[in-house]
Amino acid sequence: MTSEAAFIAALRAIATAPGARGLHDDAAVLAIGGAQLVLTMDAIVEGVHFLPGDPPDSVAWKLVATNVSDLAAKGAVPRGCLLAYPLADEDWNAAFLTGLAAACDAFAIPLLGGDTVRPPEASARSFALVALGEGVAGVTVPARSGAQPGDDLWLSASVGDAGLGLALLQGKGTADPSHTEALVERYRRPSPNPALGVALAPLVHAMMDVSDGVLIDTARMAQASGARAVIELDRLPLSRAFVATLGDELEHRLFAAQAGDDYCLLFAAPPSATGLISLSQTHGATLHRIGRIESGIGLALTHAGTPVPLPERLGFQH
Image (cartoon, rainbow, N blue to C red):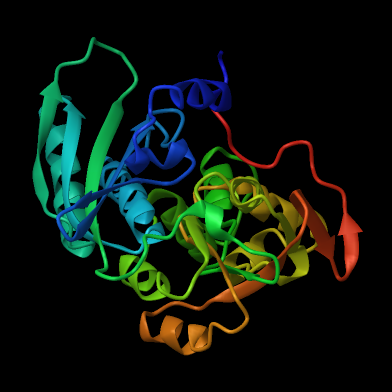
């Protein structure tokens, strides 16, 4: 039971409360009185989710942003967070706190408490944050599992920048300095949009965030929904910095779809969901239709109308 998927499957025998949603979703949902409390926890680990040389303030930002991204995917308004923090040297602690304060302020998610520990010397840094949000009254908190045949498949932002930024930090290729800065920023400082998630929640059948890669996360939505998702790779939104650095041929589009760390919204909505584009512009985002949901099971890819075989690796897995 060494794989992430196998361990989560075993946990389902324990997490049987309705609020756990069968561990198939980005967050848990508890009905308390007339409110819907949305809870999530993401951890980030040095060498896995961030590099040893990343600035402490950006590590703190990423920790908060990844959790806020889960709340956004459930259409939840951020209400607070709890931090588990391994004490480091004084300068590292101070820089981390600067980034933490900036992120909590930017995403309007107050720090409510948490825990501190003193880890063994030379151990990898590891952080965890519990984020709490509130679903909108009268609106069902979207799950991954609601996608229906006939739905369109959408993304709320371009993808691939974070993965390319990581590759550049690892010395895999070069880019124009201005493009490098933009790509590295997408890796170190994700920008989820919880207000957009709240606005989309009444209009979608299914919604989740893209953390491990468009391909693997879309496959998860399709599996949870008992449906088949078709991604049109030529519709995949790529940024100017990405295209200028790597290109937009099929192989590069596949890289962008597998890379992960995008922290944008992936959702399925019926064609009758009018107002999506104007809604997104109101919230400072551009929505991109990238495919559709069909009857069947699994994931399929096309490029310029031609079927594309699924790559052996769909995205990041522990």
